[in-house]
Each structure stands twice: as C-alpha cells, then as structure tokens.
Image (cartoon, rainbow, N blue to C red):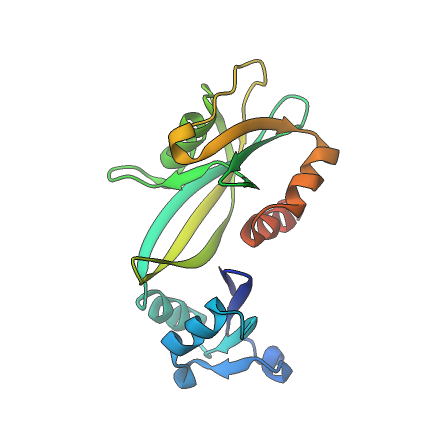
Length: 198
C-alpha cells in the first residue's frame, strides 16, 4: 500500500480488498482524479482508499498524472541518540532536498543533510522508507517522493541552518523534545517515525 498526503488529507493506493468496507473505498477506474484532488485540497474529502488488483499498475499509472519530484534526506542520530531536527517555514522538519542530476539517492541525502545543517562527515547507515505528498506549483499538481535514510553524525560540530532554504534553526533533540517536535511536524514525518520503530 502507498500512503500519499495532500494537505491534511490522505490517499491510500491499495490492492487489498480488505478495505472494501471503508466509506471512502473507490475503484481506480472510477476515479476523477482532478475533482478528487480539489475536494482534498479544500478539505471536503479527508481520505480515499483507491483500489486496483495490481498495485504496480496502480502506482505507475497514478504517478503519470503528476509532475514528479524526487528528494532524499536523513534521520540523523548522534552518539547520545539525539536526533537532528530543522525548523523550516514555521514547522519542525527533517533535512531533505531535491536529488540533482548525476546523483544517486544516497549521495543526495548526505549532501542535503550537510548543506541544510552545516555538518560534515555524515555517515549513511540504512534506507528506511520513501514518503509521498502532493502539492501544487503554479497550478500544476506535483507528486514529491522523498527517500529517507538513517544516518550518524558527531554532535561536536557547529550546526548552521541554511537560511536561504527557509531554515531558521538546527537542533539535536532528545526523546522528550523530539516528541514535542513530532506534534508540530508534517504527517509524512510522523509516518516515517512509525516505520523507524519497526
């Protein structure tokens, strides 16, 4: 199943008929996507379970309806098991950014973490998951796919927020403060943390 966020609404792409009893269950062939997106953007529709018997067909066909942007970022721990957070555009977030030409996902993830936080010598540990969200840019619907990696960085470095990217603060947060940040972050980051615990 794919979980795709759009503002405060969510689209589930599934090949599982177990969701058939959900009020918001629809067959992909019956979906008017542009109308559905408008309803989600204006808050009149909060969730949809979109079904097709082939999840691969469903995902590939769904993606073709959007301009795709791929990004990569890091869930960065230090030697004290504190987690690196950024404060961007008025909300807590994790460092990530667009994958550039001739970059693989891992290279982009490390580069973005180092650029956005002023770090060096970031070590990549393992891939966690990809998250998905939809937004509009110049009235064009965009599907952003973000690839997340667990990383390590030494805390004895001066953190420097990349201000030109809207980042006003970079902080190592312990468990208590991290859960406060999770209350003021995006749904895809909350989903990422659920998967991190597995």
